Amino acid sequence: MARALTGGTRCQIGKTLPFHLAIATQIARCSHSVIGTAITPMPPIGRVGMSQQRQIILRVREMIMTGALQAGERVTEIRLAQSLGVSRTPVRHALSILAQEGLLVSADVGRGFVVRAFSEKDIRDAILLRGILEGTAARLVAEKGLDVDSRKILQSCLTRGEAIFAKGMLHPGDGIEWAEINEVFHNTLVAAAGNTALTQALALNDRIPFASASAFFDDAENAPVLTQQFAVLRRAQEQHESLFAALVAREGARAEALMREHAYVAIDNIALFRAPTDAPSGSEV
Image 1 (tube, rainbow, N blue to C red):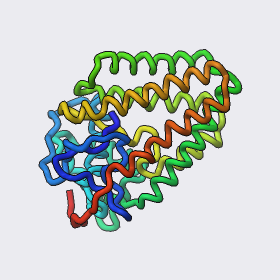
Image 2: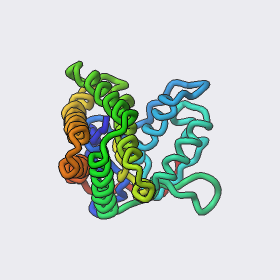
Image 3: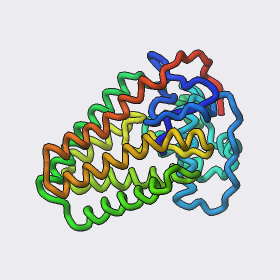
């Protein structure tokens, strides 16, 4: 479900980037861009469940990553809710979450938010630090041994992941499922380390957009994109499996190395999405 931008248009990643673009989705999805296209309204919903709320967050994050919402652009709750075909309440929550992640900042004048721009160096530095921090967490967990509850949760994540990839291809909705699996896996591992300072450091680092383990994921619906995502997400699943084996075997050094490599994959993918950004910013949604 991490989707690398795909699109009939070019995936945009500039040199100093409004790095609110394609970059991060840790995959190669370049055939379903929302740049310059109308937003597909989501079906109206009454009571917003967790999966639906997550879908709204992912949709808005995708709009930022692909450049549908550009650096410096003002984002208002009302107009965004109308564009997505949902009520204001889940949109308000989504904007709050994305502001906490650092993708949005409060508008200087009036209500609403403005899309924040980051340099490629900002993203690289944050991902490198996440690799170090999560690698340290993995080593600590391996050295002291997985507790029973954490082991069950991690094993459940692997089982759920296997069920997705056993089908031989991704289907619509699998992206949402994978995002949840990935988030639970990483959060459980960090929590199992039992190091408050490390947990707080990760939370602070994750305020840089695309630095967190879950920030690179969105959902896809068309076949070309799903096909592209399959190989990338399968690799992530295999890395989770190798890491789990190292944790169970209490191989601290190996667990740390695997976790760092797992995080650094995001950096490898940044170069895949370079393209000049020349669209103007400063409009309002």
